[in-house]
Length: 254
Ligand SMILES: [Fe+2]
Image (cartoon, rainbow, N blue to C red; front, side, top):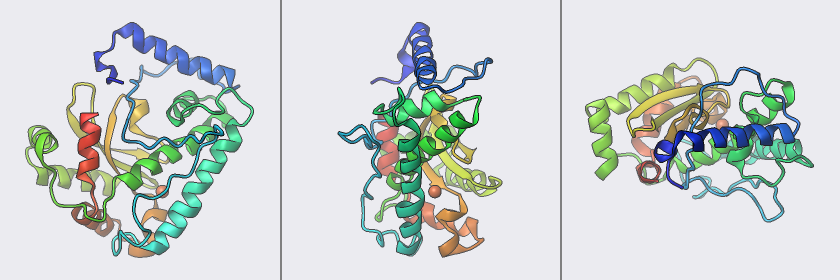
């Protein structure tokens, strides 16, 4: 699907109506005051996590569990992927079981639960969004990653940040400076302009009209076993050795 920057305003309203209707059908409360319209960016690079049964599946890692060492150890992954990520998947499946959201694509569940007015909606959003975020995080890393991007992505970075180095500096500052649990992101807006941002807890760019290109998890469970309180070291090494620029380029092109 094309990004909705090319879609008429009516199309965007219809998408919002669809998300609200889905939420209502699932028994999720929605706040009366709507937030600004968000844009549906279908991110083709995100793996389909819906199984034939309709339940979400824990995605398989696209590399061996020790392939990201020493920046991210197999020990960290044994907790982070096998326990934390799995719990988000299981919690989401349990929350939507028997509702209108059961069997829906993950992105639809995230959108339907976003901006919920009750504890049930907030819990579903937190779990479903964390499934999406972690699916995206694992693919944001590559054992042969790091270095610099090429082609259109590098050109866009140089256009919007001045240089790759300035982007990397800004990314590290935003991700490292995020207070408490959250995520650092390289994103594109509707016009394709790149920027960096952080989100707290389970929050994510797609409900704020941004297309995610790359993300780093800065919850302590992502780095504490390997780097303890040295979040800045984790971010720097992650960028230098693991950042998956091919994935980011595919998201920009998608
Ligand atoms: Fe995480």
